Image 1 (cartoon, rainbow, N blue to C red):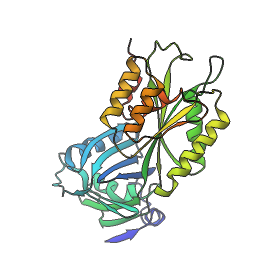
Image 2: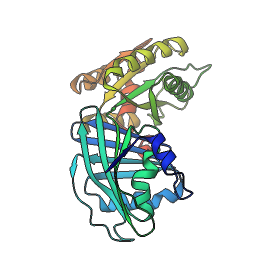
Image 3: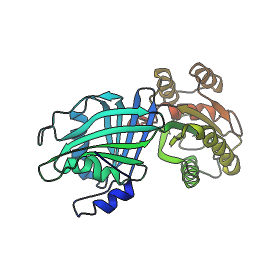
Image 4: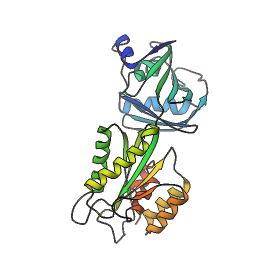
Length: 310
């Protein structure tokens, strides 16, 4: 076995058949691990996603968004029975070792090259343990080691007024600014709320921003989010809600659907948030709590999030 850092991999394997991944991120919540990979290709990467989803017992679900792969996994070890074309690649072991996550990939031929050399060159990788170097007809196997990060989703609502502003753009710009400050900004989801709400400014949507952060930086992320919203919001009703970890409680999703299909009160939002131990924070006012909490319940379901209920 050979242990190499990304820059060492780039020096050793600068061949034309190596296509470096852009980035690899892992987030941990108990025995659940969410892996996000930014593949060097776009639609061509769908072949790999299909192989991984079908062949890896440790993967519970997976999807592709452009060149971004998202795998929801469980820790453990399930060796792969590699077979060309049919079982060509996958994950066979996931270990959380204190502040590191170790994911062992294996694959045949080109998939074996991707297992270690391509992934290992991506931003976010600490180092790679190369077990077998793939290529040609040979199998490849490698353990990719990344930091143990935590998932934080921030729901935001009511930053605009009848006269000016847009919550979706303000939220995105907030995410970009936080990224420049060192917080990993992963996603931005627009959640359509009840279109007949008489209090809406216009389209009646709230926003969920997803981040991956170190355990000791969670509070700093939330505090900085509040500071930036106080600086930039145009509304006296702005609120945020905070969801930590991987997965969405059933009651939270039910609340979100109810907020899409009918009127909701601040009191009900506070009741649900308290029951689920979800921080609900009035930045400039309480009314935004309704939509901020609703955004959290659908951040992982884009199709349902944007659906309009007439």
